[in-house]
Image 1 (spheres, rainbow, N blue to C red):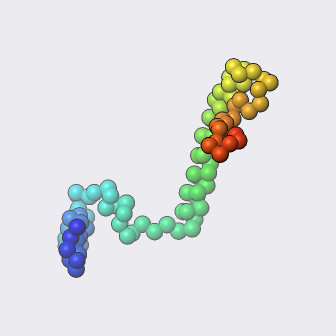
Image 2: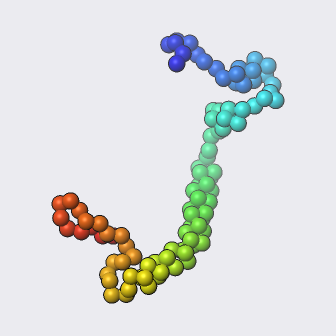
Length: 99
């Protein structure tokens, strides 16, 4: 940890400021975390919509596998046993917790 009162500047930021030009040895972290990245509301909205769409797509791709696993569990344990697909556990205070 540097002593109090002394500003520490990254090498690339220092060279960029002093030479007033582009430097060939740019660090990716410097580009990502520099103060020039400001996202507007449209960019934030499109990012959120992309995230929502991607997660929904992944869920829909994984859904048949989840249904097949649940069906396999039911076939293995039998149809008359309730809650065989959802996990359950005994609790120290008594009773049973199930989803």
